Length: 156
Image (tube, rainbow, N blue to C red; front, side):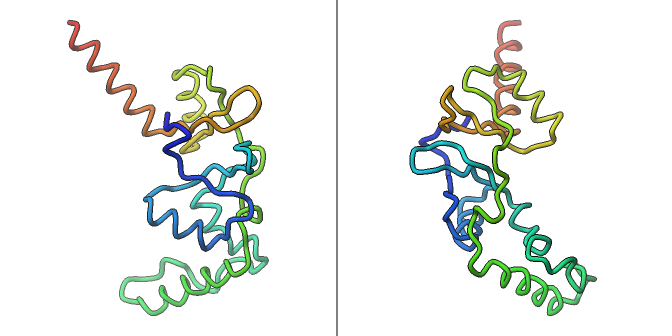
């Protein structure tokens, strides 16, 4: 689990532009969304931010966002159109409210099962009052599995 002190988080009032910059800067794919008291109020992912076309009411883009090879101008134009839709939008506009969470007492096996069944990349970890204490990701599960494997192999 990535502990609260090491997390990158956003608030509902964070602009979508700022969130996009943070995603790129920290090389992450999403954030827990918290209030001023660290209560979890939602999650937002790179997918949510890329789905701005849908929530803006524009419907599908005029052209495929990943056009044929050698049509770089067309690609640039489509990305510009997508980014122009972030103007004035805040995280509250695109986040998933009341996300699936695990408690800090949930064991690793149950958290891993939830990640597999839901196909989510991350699950917020909350305490009994709903305050964010961390996040568990697929990468955390893989790392823990490798550590367990090394311990077992080391004892053989």
